[in-house]
Length: 168
Image 1 (cartoon, one colour):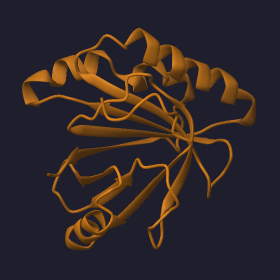
Image 2 (cartoon, helix red, strand yellow):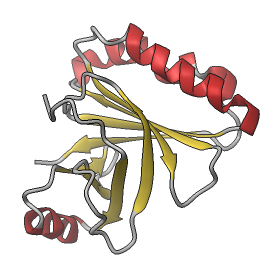
Image 3 (cartoon, rainbow, N blue to C red):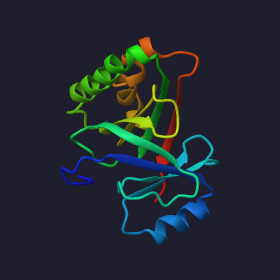
Image 4 (tube, rainbow, N blue to C red):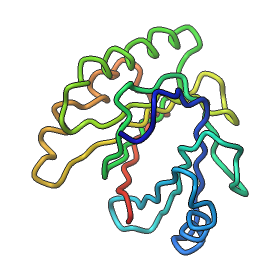
């Protein structure tokens, strides 16, 4: 388990070069930070600060945590799904994410679900971060539990998904 029963309120993320992000992670070693690389070509790097402490990044993406699964564990694959929603669909969307998290709680591959609202963006935008423990042979299982299929009614021209892998 990554953390105690404490409920996280905020999540901060920063992008940059791998050496700079590694330096930040080392400087703040007491924090729960995870370094990620985009899965495709390892050309984009991201540092996620799970500490829920004051932001230390120069230009962060800041999120309010609306929901986190009670089974917050770390895995090796981070998938972000970004949605631009109509204001009247927020409650239904948030409830679908909570429900999906609950029905997938016993998955041996799904490690965590976080429902996020950008603090610096439109209040009706949402990001869903799912963290998986997987390898190439488990990709079929990952697809079976695909959040995008569950939330298909909310996918529009502003939807996008990005996948990262954990760097050690």
